[in-house]
Image (tube, rainbow, N blue to C red):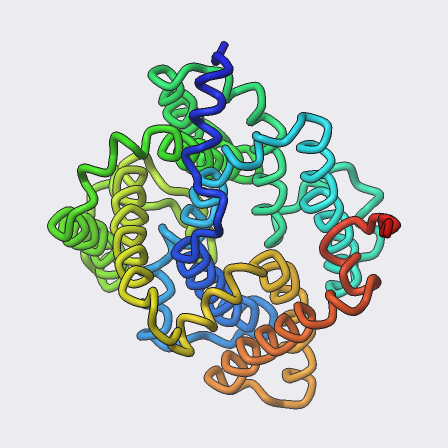
Length: 358
């Protein structure tokens, strides 16, 4: 078991002030997810295929989108574990389990499948909510797994990644593969004092160059370049990526590490200066990532069906409409949830207001 000193040290690895570079990366990842679904949803619902360039761009970022979100959540895990256990679990039930159920019902309505709740496997969805489910289960397991001392804790993500190689496609693969990055983020938080020596411009360039090369090879594979089996992610019948082999783990870790070093440098140059609009835009999305993530997918489904019914099937128009609508409604929801308890209840379980004492 971890001693009190080790727990306190782990809790102090993440500063109490908000890390704006994390919001910058998280906002970028969420924006990439919204753009990716703005391509996939029209393709699967209305058979609207994207152009080659757009398809290549989304494929290039495919290994890094969701893994970065999971790793960043793990990076902030020490702060969450500093709460008392009862408060910790109550927080995850309110902010993850509750919106999962709420938006699962919304998804059933949006897809005209209101009887899905009668099937037990319908609650373990493979829709976009798989990420919320994996994140919640990772948080549930975290208080037990983080008792493992730091030198041995590396076995947790390694074991999960190894399990992903034999896990069947679906929830079990998602849980093992992506939860590995969640606990890798926690391991980084516990050992970041040892990793600071690698915070150099040369390391940043090498990490980004190496991961970018693999991502480029993934794109070239779609244009006829044949790669050996261990380096290629599996695909389903639609050509969408379903799983990644183990060789992608160091590639993804390198890409996220290089991006983190770059984001920290960008944030460092902005301190003391007027924040540029793109940076404020991405950080706002990152701070409210759960709202943008939950809203965009069912909204895009409904929008594509409405546009198809109206005879609008041009890919650039439909894709742009999906992105703009998702961002506009999400920004509106972020503003409204501060004023409306009903809107806020879509994203977090409502609590009774605490009386203010004079």
